[in-house]
Image 1 (cartoon, rainbow, N blue to C red):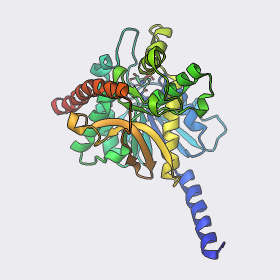
Image 2 (image 1 turned 180 degrees about the vertical axis):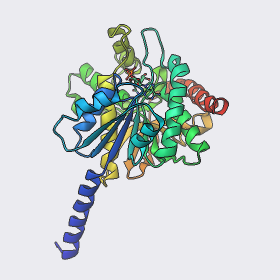
Image 3 (image 1 turned 180 degrees about the horizontal axis):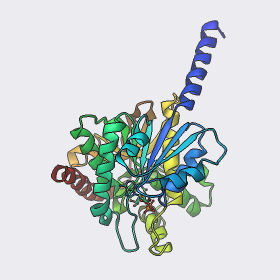
Image 4 (image 1 turned 30 degrees about the vertical axis):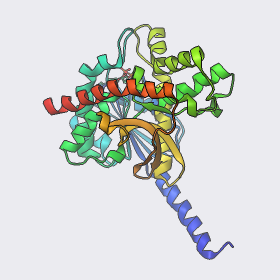
Length: 340
Ligand SMILES: NC(=O)c1ccc[n+]([C@@H]2O[C@H](COP(=O)([O-])OP(=O)(O)OC[C@H]3O[C@@H](n4cnc5c(N)ncnc54)[C@H](O)[C@@H]3O)[C@@H](O)[C@H]2O)c1
């Protein structure tokens, strides 16, 4: 029966979702880079974003002026590199995405970026902890396996750490997995979903094909597909011949993750995205962080799903992944302890 009470609650829900929609501030740190620019453009197209704050050590006001002419309702502001501008960019943010740092060149692993990116991410995390402690923080800068633990340590040191709100963005691995499996099977990638667990670097990326629509993929085809998902980023790095790594597909993936979080924070349910978060699943193996299927809610992480039933082959992949992952995580944690 359609009662006054149910009518009221429907209107109430609508009112909630509209006002939430009008009040979502999203900040991009590193907004003028290869990822930052297309990511900011995609966020400008997202009607759930009302206020888009773009910060970079160079060029953010220009990117903001350009994007601000796109005729969607949101307000775009670019910020020059100064502490008070970074503060203004961060204050009131619901989501902060960090693609700041240097990308890979051919022959480099994501771990090779640690030296440069660790301190960039640490310093931006300090600013986020101070000016936007309640925002959901989405880390794109590599090596994600180490930069996420760096952010956690910084937030802990400032006593504002909430593991529900810190995410390493592994969405690109999931996007690639569904695209690559569709190429093997001749299907529409929109209908393919592959859970990818572990971390975000080489062998730490573990696609669970046994849980996909094609669990029977086996032998050399399976091995080649898994390798392509794990090292898909290298295809782009090689094709760009030194000009950087994946930027456009990464922007797509980052904007999808931000949109999923915005939808969840506006009350939508049943939203799942794998992401690299603090997780109980493999803590005993030295991995305080692990990517698995995550249900998102208004607070960020709503529920961390276990890896579930995997094949013996995948069990082997997870075992290999855990070893590298534990080292990468420790490296990030120790970096902050010795370089606070
Ligand atoms: N998570 C993923 O799946 C994924 C995928 C691809 C690339 N990445 C990583 O994303 C990062 C960015 O890649 P890109 O191709 O956009 O690089 P880029 O060099 O094109 O852009 C990086 C931007 O960060 C800015 N920057 C540097 N230090 C900064 C600071 N302290 N504060 C604010 N901005 C700062 C630079 O000025 C530049 O505009 C790299 O670390 C790359 O490895 C991650």
